[in-house]
Image 1 (cartoon, helix red, strand yellow):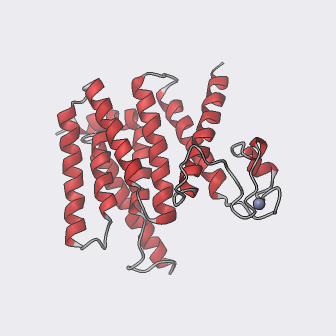
Image 2 (cartoon, rainbow, N blue to C red):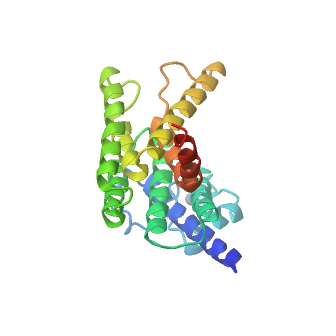
Image 3 (cartoon, rainbow, N blue to C red):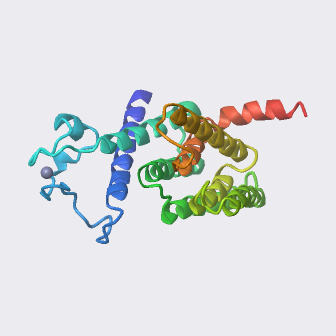
Length: 256
Ligand SMILES: [Zn+2]
């Protein structure tokens, strides 16, 4: 029985990922997200529903447009698959519950996947997505009052300030102002101490990736790393493993 629920969750995740693709690839278009029908970006032919099935259509069409044979970016199925796997992993590790807190975390996970891709592809963290994540974190904080809205706001302010100092002192070279806003929002979502460790984890992974890329001569000190992708990715990991991490943390903290 559970397997059917997981299958439904996986399919739902693919659909959310498909929606993220619409956001990712129609960033510059002004004609709205919901109204615009999907069309091939090359031959502009309107695509039928069977060309728009998440993941399946990409595999069936072997990564090419049915009409003009132009290659379809692998980013499309990747976004869909990543979104679906992230949501599956969340329910796998936290149980098949569907209360307010699960809805909140799934929504945040989807927004964080969007930010990972936006920063990796365009080096931007759209305000709309960052603020939406912050907004629902505040609403969730007000409804649940756990671990306390003041604490969440304080963590957000603390993490944001730390990044603002880096941003100002490096004149925007080490990170963009989008990273400052995202750090604030991560504080609102995860609070202290989990949010703090999520950000530290992101800093270390980003540094490691930077060092490896420089060693492989793929990057120099001047290459802009999408730090927002690392921070959003780290937030995803820490939400998925939240319960496990909090258990371990309370164990470690109990020694002090
Ligand atoms: Zn085409």
